[in-house]
Length: 408
Image (cartoon, rainbow, N blue to C red; front, side):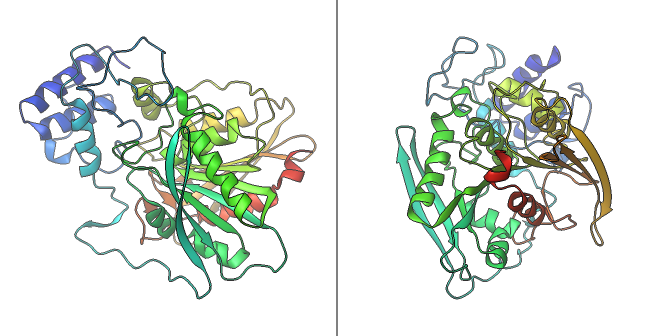
């Protein structure tokens, strides 16, 4: 953060209290882009696509208690205080900002009707259920394909949606259910409610939501285990993936539950532990650069996809996830391939392997792409149909990396 950031947020709060929401929104956008208060877009341009997402918008700072720096109780929400003077109305300003921002990549904005999602074939099901533990309750939707191999255990893919999304929206946009029909696997979509986060973001930056058997990780793991208990799931082929805030949460799950998930997919996300509170979430989303730690256990195989024009979550965050994935392997090698999605984006695919040939990480840099699920369907939000097909590449990576290979 620059020295002018706290003063700028105080000014944004003052503008909000004065009822000047457009000016406050524009100021926050300029601060996040590193521009001085007097520079940048006009208020009517403040909602330009991809400038800010809502991963960090979780609080009403007007009534949040001040807490000691670094202190956090399980289930408590961070105060989000940037400066003693930044209180009344700032949380509401940020929520208004997030809700009002056009994605630029989400058909349906501006009154346009989205195309219908893929029809569900006869014999398939997409049912809602819920799971509860000491950390709370989360609903989820489970897709069971109509076509599945008889008498065989099935892979399971856990999909974590991004901010403002829902399981149905995320399923429509990623088309993961369509792939489930092609390949015969189960897909579960945990749902983050607005009661847990006003913009339905997974709280990837809170310390209590970055630990095993605590907060949201315990709920997501509990949903995973419930599906494994109730359905014929192959425990060696359980995977987790997510977009944006969901991608950051997937990175958390792969780090703290390496015994549960065989591989992880992170699209436009952030590494585990990159932020500890709201100010650090602002900073890391804007500029990346979280130093890689040396994991205490071997990381699970990870596939990372990130657009190099992503102005919401800096592409450097994808680099940081890769750095952590290879940190324990002194002899890691990398091979880089380049390609072009038909009629769409070019990309670079870096494959990191150990000397034994075991895959550590795949890193897809999508050239010219912003903050959206690559190759997704316009039936869902935050998708970029210009490819490459992120869902298909994640699934391919997952099925190539079952636990019996990852654990060798």
